[in-house]
Length: 464
Image (tube, rainbow, N blue to C red; front, side, top):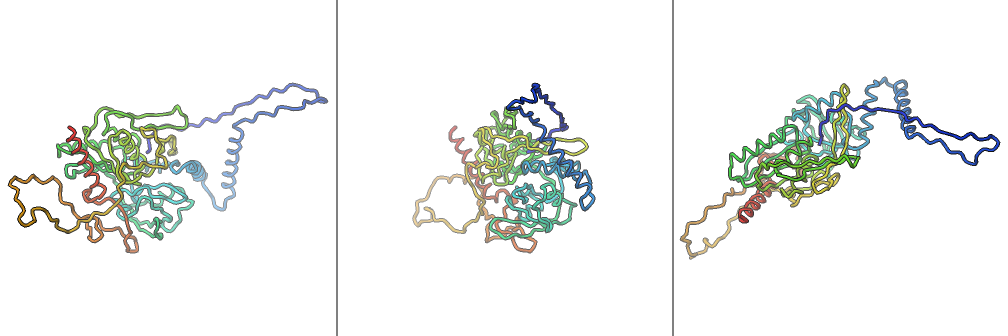
C-alpha cells in the first residue's frame, strides 16, 4: 500500500550548546569528586556523519576505479533505507517516474510483484495475463539468479531494474521452489498494461476480480457492479476475487471496502507516535444493496487487498474463503524530493477494524479452500423411476434448478486448451503451477464461492 504524499523532505540539523558551570576551587584542596561534563546527545550522531564523510572521500580518491559522487551517495541513501525493512527504499528521478507510471496502471516488465527475503528475491504474486503468469511462476517462488547473476547482495530495486527492459527482449530467471531442484525460466519482456478490474456473471452470481490496486480501481469496480446489476437484475450476490493481488494505494483500498459497507471502520494506521493514529470509516451507500459477498484470498493477496479482506471480514459483511494471505501490514509513504526523486519510507502499520495487525501473520479465511482440480465422473445414477413397475407421478415435474451441468476442468486426464500447462525453458512442465483459469467458472475456488453465495442468498430469502 503506497499512499502518495507530495511533500518536500527537509532536514534541519541544529546544535544544542551546553553550558557547564563549575565552582572555583583551591588547587591545593581539590574536591573529592568533580561532575563530568554532560555529553551532548548529538555528539555521537555527528561523529558518525564525520565517519561517513571520511569513507566517502577515501572511496572518491583511492578506490581502484573512478567513481561518481552522485552514484555513491545514492547508493548510501538506498542502503540506509533498505536496512530498515524490505519495503523502504530510495528512488532516483528516473525510478520515481517509473513508479508513477506503474501506479497509473501501465508499465514494462515481466508482471511480478517481488520483495526481499533472506537475501533473495521472493515473488509475492504474478500478475494475470503477463509473461510471469503465463510461465507458471508462483507466489512464494524465490529468484536466485537473473541472467546467471546471483541476486544475493543485490538491492531490491537493482534486481527490479535488471528484470525490466525493452519490450520483446528476454531475461532468464533461476527459480527456487519448495521441494524442487532449482530451474531456469526464460521470459520475454512485455508491456504490462493492467486491467485493474474484470467482471462477469456466473449463474446469477456476480464475479469481480480485482487484479491489483491503482488510481482507477474504485471507478472500475463501481462500473462493473452497476453493469452486472443492469444485465442481471436478480443477481444473488457477489464474489470479490483478491487472489494474487499485491496491493496498491491506501485510498483505493478504503474506497473499494466502502463500496460494500454502509458504516463502520475500515482500517486504521498507527505510526511511531501513539498520537498519530488515522482512522478511515465507511460512508452510507452499499453498492451491492446488502447482497451476500464472498471474498477470495490466497498467499499472493497482500497489502491493500488484505485491508479490503480484513475490513469486510471484521464488519461481518463478507465471508472469506481460500488460503491465508501474505501478511504485509505496513504503510509506505512516498516522500517526493524535487529534483532528486523520492524515498519510500515505512511510516506506519495498519490495523483491521478489530484492532489486529496482520503484519507478518496474514489473514486466515473463514473457510479454508485449497487449490484443487475439478473432474466430472462419468456414471449413471439409479433412481426410483428406473425400477420396474414404479408408480408414475401424474403431477407436472418441477422446473430444474438454474444450475449448469458441471464441466470437467483442470483435470489431469484431460487437456485444457485454454490453459496449457506452463513450460520451463528446457521444455518440461512446471508441476502444480497455479494461475487462475481463464474461465472463472472452471476455477474450483470460484465455484465454491458461487455455491456459498447461492446458499447465503437462499437462506436470506427463507428468513424473510
